[in-house]
Image (tube, rainbow, N blue to C red; front, side, top):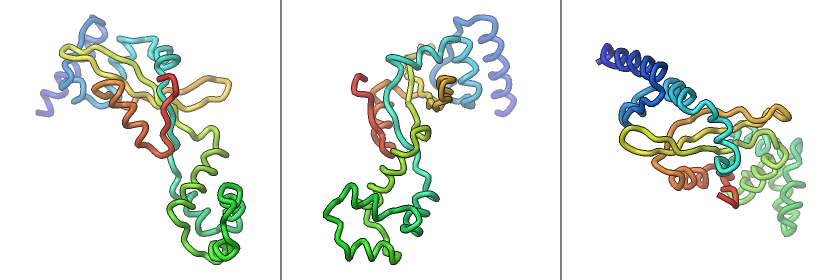
Amino acid sequence: MIFSDKLFRLYFYCMAAMFMRYKPSLKRFQSLPLSDQFYWLSKKYPDYADLCYGEGYLGVSYPINDALVQDYEYQPEEYGVVDILRNRVPALSDDRARDILAGSKLSQEELGIVIEAIAEKDTDGWWGHHGFEIELADQTVFTHFIGRSLGQGGVDFEYCGTFNDAQSLKDWIERQPLGQLDWMS
């Protein structure tokens, strides 16, 4: 089986290099490591980064750093947790504020507010979700790239795989932490 996989990968690279019209089946394509999928994709669609802009932009999410959230929870005074909560929940009682400063666990709602505040401050930490349709031998699928800001240098796109269609990817984005779809997508 290993020899068969290696032989197919060699065939795949040769076909991709020689005949850019070659389209693997979905099963074959998804059996390849992401790096090989991306190799084929980048040869077949050399302007893949351009395709990720405009209509290729679908939404954003924020990858939550659990260790940082724990720091906020375990060191509320150092991180100004009570001030964060009071700015967003004016009805926060003085008793609850004292409990938090004394080390009381944050409620799910309070934790969500803290995570939103962390995300708002970390403008470069958001992930953009991008993609476009590609044709394989037996069906059309939708690519998924995560875009990370390079400041004035643009965006670095990392290939993450495929979804059956754009709607499946959009549904997935909405399930991510602080996931939001672009209002135009």
